[in-house]
Length: 126
Image: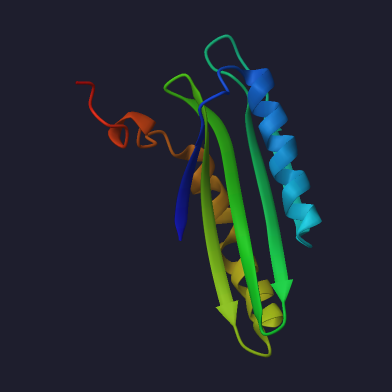
């Protein structure tokens, strides 16, 4: 599953870093195991970006979440990829899945250039 969140009040790198920290805090409060976090420093050409990779283990399920937070169209945006597995051995299966696909998925997510604009979902001005 892919989810795109936008943060209308976030218009700069500092605000985006704050959102990334709040997202990470929300994940950990909800019993996520943090596998990886990373930030790509800002450059003169672009603001910083942030990556959060967690797993949410539960009884008979486990979900891996890869969240990339970046600025898009002047607004804070998160592109979130989730992969959920079910069953009594879901944890073992997820470990194997992450080993086989996690690094590639992370690279693809961080290389994604085009994120649908929040403008496509906003009502047209009348």
